[in-house]
Length: 311
Image 1 (cartoon, helix red, strand yellow):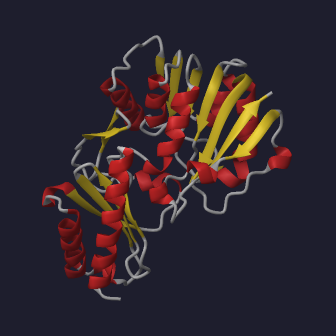
Image 2 (tube, rainbow, N blue to C red; image 1 turned 180 degrees about the horizontal axis):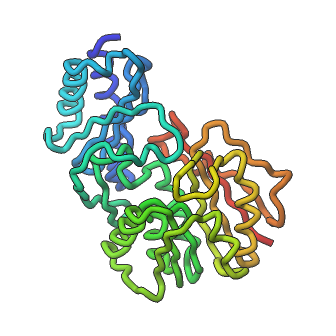
Image 3 (cartoon, rainbow, N blue to C red; image 1 turned 90 degrees about the vertical axis):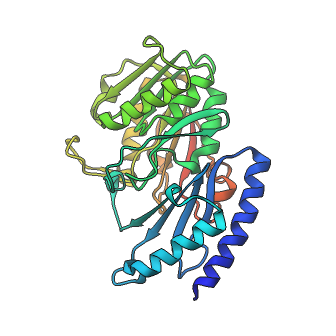
């Protein structure tokens, strides 16, 4: 398949997506999602910045610098952006949190807008930028449900759910992750939106699997759980596998969730199956995957999403 096929497809997708995004007041969105097998890219637009992640096949043309340069030129022309505002990332097969390993050391943090809230992204240093666009809808649900609630954001990454909870007038927001880097990033995101109260907003660096059993019962009314698919981090005593371990964690979380409290559980494992038989004590378990996938991610469906309500 020739480069002209990719150019034509990208031009068509961008025309459609740009029109759709403008009608929805969305400034950060996916333009192209592996539409053509010979061009296995994802291309995301973060306001005036574009990130293209290219799957690398062993001995494939992705290692050809001239080919990559041609791809870059096409993206620049079709999306009409300046050359300094594009980042091309080569994506190797990875597990767990390896996707968070550094690719560069620019330290660049740029502010982008989503539904009136601001988030810092790093377009260059990591494969992921700091804002998962496929959870755009889920974040709105959290904002709606957070009014007067005590909110806990687990595996919080850069705290986007925490920002939405604070914007929804939560009485308390606790942000938990094992990484100092991401907790500091989360705090910057909160401060960027004016949420600076040390009494209302906590940031805790801890192994979540060890920490939950120490939390007093019914401490939270709304919990967001978006764990990695797999992790063997040196900061954890044990490995984590979302398919193997989700029941244990969800059952533990119930003890710290108030009666009638809501748990949003999501993950990115394509073959994930929720083990309903062994989950205990929840009044309602509802799959919301289809409703939670934004239009620009319908092709790849990158996550599953469930809402559980405690008895």
